[in-house]
Length: 357
Image 1 (cartoon, helix red, strand yellow):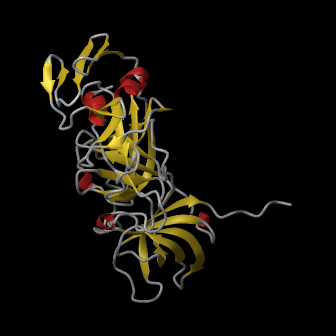
Image 2 (tube, helix red, strand yellow; image 1 turned 30 degrees about the vertical axis):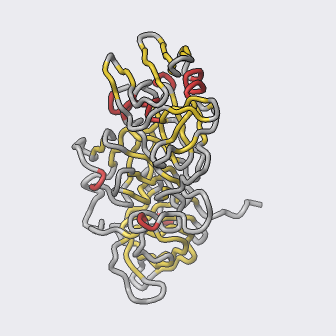
Image 3 (tube, helix red, strand yellow; image 1 turned 90 degrees about the vertical axis):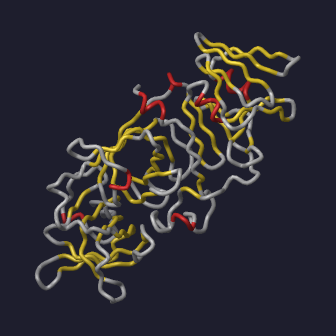
């Protein structure tokens, strides 16, 4: 595993809105699906922190006094990672050893030994109810494990347990602002998966050039290499190592608008226009703040018709009842519902077909 894949385990506190109602925090509304469940500005509060190590649940943790760092039980962590712990009662310290790994954790002292150098994490270990707790960043920075914090859930994996998967999907939401950034692919709302990205996540164009998160737009088809481990939230969230845009210059024709709006929902009606074109009427939820949740889209010769894997679909698959996502420019008629021209339509679920008798 390369350094980028290991270092992306840096703590990404992405709070998930697990309840009902508006699923995205207000400060993300302009860049994420409005009627979707994803990251929230602050859902930590005083709730217990649920901790799992290599997939097994551990003792509940808690947030430190500043609410910025999850605290986790040290002995649970070391036992799960196969690290020997020796407790020194006199100075309330723990000596940790495993192979070439060696460090000492001292209660109340923000000082940790890594490769014979002293490291500060900004939070000191502390004893709570007779148990020594350390900041979750200790597992990452000192023990070299992979740590992912989402809301009040902390998932930790030892380096040897980290496995990666690659999947393709169309981008339906992007959070490119602030410290904790993410991409939603493969569906809208609670569908698909949220890719948590960090400073070490690699972004590539279809021709192999380095790009940035800010170069991405909703509607792009991408391939993501991410951790096999994901949160149990809806949609699940996972640390991501590499994102490659699959759209080529040929597919990025003039039909692609500079500003992209999106609506995810069900086709309510399909009709043929006077010039033998096709119109689909989508009703569902908007992917951006300025997009309508009910829209009629003209399907032109330049409109891409694909599934989430980027495979071309036939126009005949755009039938009443099909679950789709339409991407289009902000140039819409003033009618209700507004009418525009689709740049791309992604089919998620075909309409139910009647059973043959």
